Image 1 (cartoon, rainbow, N blue to C red):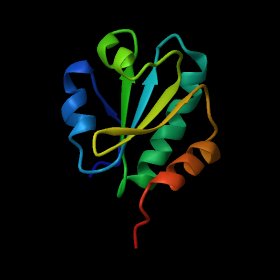
Image 2: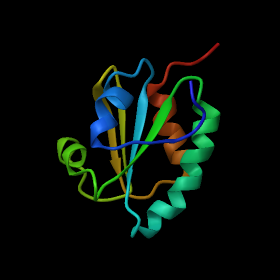
Image 3: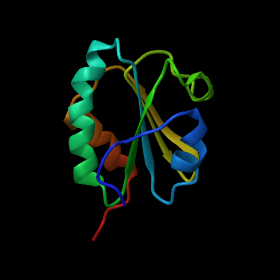
Length: 112
């Protein structure tokens, strides 16, 4: 159970996201995207806070067209929440930390 955001590629997506035993938040970003630079520290913070019940992975859109196409990423930043290999939530555009926390709390199991 990592408490860090894991950088992945198309080739690593199935194992890192679809075969995970935890829910996975996939963060799609681009180096040229200003709002993405604002969201990266938020996701790092969330990874530390939710590491016991969520894996966060980060995928750059330009070099990974296969996953971007599969998950219909139209713009960045974009988030896709997966559980048991299934898409359960999809968001695009910059979001604040409280907005992302609300999204996660609505879908994640609570930890005793």
